Image (tube, rainbow, N blue to C red):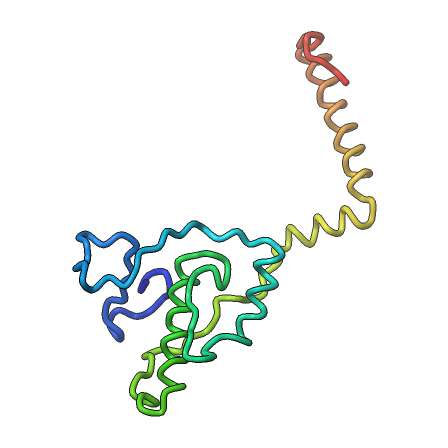
Amino acid sequence: MNELQHISEKDHGPVLVTLNPPFEPKTDLVAGRYKYEHPVLDSAAISAQKKMKTIQHVRGISFAGAWLKYGFHEDGFTSGLHAAVGIVQGDSNLAGTIRPPFEISPADREPEVPHVATLFDLLEGTGLRVCLAYSLSFCLSVVRWAFCTFLGLDLSHVDRP
C-alpha cells in the first residue's frame, strides 16, 4: 500500500495488504469464511453507498470494503482505516489510543480536463468538426491527385466512397 497510496515507508514502515495469505490461518481463530466477488456499481449500489453514513458505526457495527467506493483495493484499505478509526473514536475506553500516522482522505478529486478535450468540445459544439472534415477531405483529394498526376501512380484499385 505504500506505493499505491504514497505512504512514506521511511516514516510509517511497510503498510501491507494481502488477499491470499501464504498459509491457512488457524481454524480455531476463523470466525467465518465468505466468498466475495467484485462489486457491481449500478444505480442501486451507488444509492446504497450514499446511505451508508446513516448506519455506519450504529449499534456497534462498522462496515468496510472496496464496495463502499469504486471497488478498488485502495478503496477497501481506506474504508478499513475509516472503520477502525471510527470504532476507536466511538469507544470512550479507546478514544485517543490509536491515531493514524497520516491523514485519511478520500481519493476523489475533480478530474483534470485535458486541453485536447476542450478542443474536441469546441469542434463538436460549434459545428466546426464538419467544416474541418470537408477541408481535410479536400486537401487529401488534392494530395491524391498530385501523386497520381506527377508521380504517375495508379490508385484506381483503391476504393473511393
